[in-house]
Image (cartoon, rainbow, N blue to C red; front, side, top):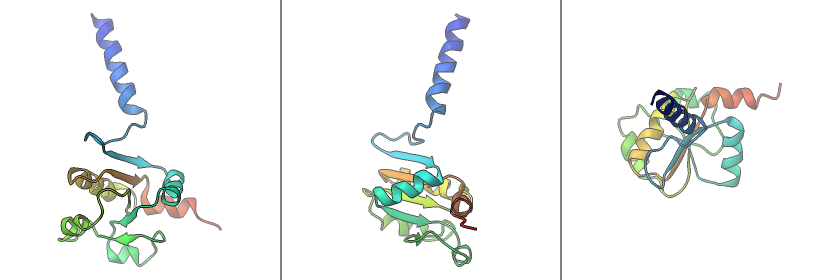
Length: 131
């Protein structure tokens, strides 16, 4: 019996730890993705690139083509409701925390495909540093 339980535990862990989408909603995709994958997807599967940082952070630099919708803005929910829920959404913040929170909100609101840039804008800058 113990062997069966241990085997089930390992199997369950393997299923959840292998890069599976984080969404629990049927027909939805929500997951953290690398800078390389983020860059590839925004070119090959165009969608809505959303920067959830503050205006002050955005003033220091942003990903080309992104729209700023600050997670801390009191109208955040109303602003994201204006987005197309059927088009992919590519989220980022400074390091990935706020955009991860925004991804959860968007999934609950019925967005079909939401990707979060793992490491955020900091990772983007580091990966795209040409010095």
